Image (cartoon, rainbow, N blue to C red; front, side, top):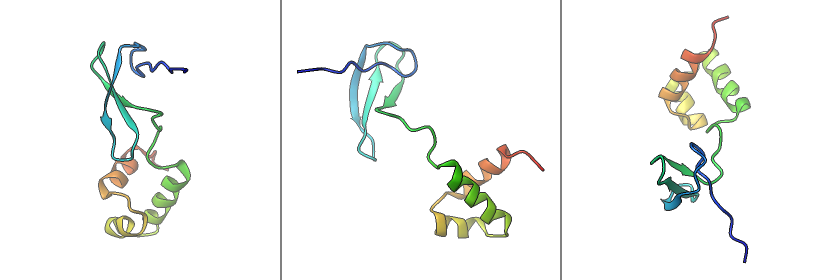
Length: 89
């Protein structure tokens, strides 16, 4: 039987223990060395770059934040944060 060694994504330590399951079903881990938590195979962003641009374009075409929430399922606060980070043109 082959056992895969899990390393902490933050500090690289192998002193990692299971720490429950995430809502999406992924295993959660806690590092005993640095105390931080992580998930197996963490994703970079919750939204792909294409979907993010599509949502921002819809907002630019006068869609309301509530409308974006209904259609795309994105929180209004998320769209506001994206707008703050987007460079002005």
